[in-house]
Image (cartoon, rainbow, N blue to C red; front, side):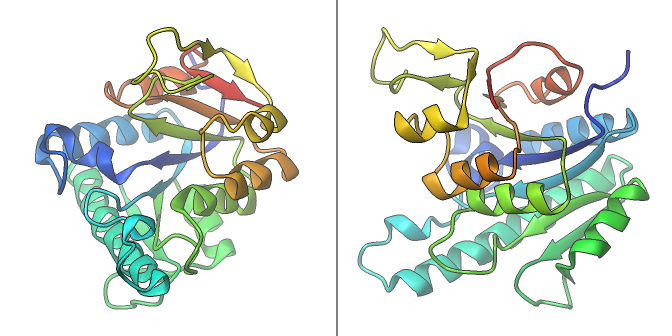
Length: 234
């Protein structure tokens, strides 16, 4: 059975790499996710990844620090996760390239759109580091931007929650999960899928979003094969 998508932008949170540790990187979790992404690539899917940095540093919650400085530190946190994921993928047998929005030539290639697309066409897994390279923009916004730029068929947002709910399911037992929802509903109802900038960018560029749980990394492959998991935003 073939995958239903040719090119996917996968957004994973930094916290998902921490496993049960809550912070830092859980080696077992890192390799499970890396192995899954590699298997997805072997199905013929072109895979690009944006990974957050919240397991090390989350700039927006650092109220006692200059916001620009805090966000720059968050970008560096994403580069740590990007390099770790690249290593896990290459240990699994994949070929990867880390492209950074902030120039750090000794450890990553500079982000150039055409170069990223060429890597994907050659079957390499591309990992985008350092968000958009600008403060005040989340890695969700970076994922929406990169998905638009590389013309991904869909953006996978793999989270610690199994879809989009009308309210926080961790706080409300009666929270209802949506199977499908529109970008406008996400914005109008403040459903918390991602920040408004990212949601509007996906809407304006007609990028569909699949939101699902990464607690079982194999969900990434199940979604790519067309199984109905989580929530589709379109």
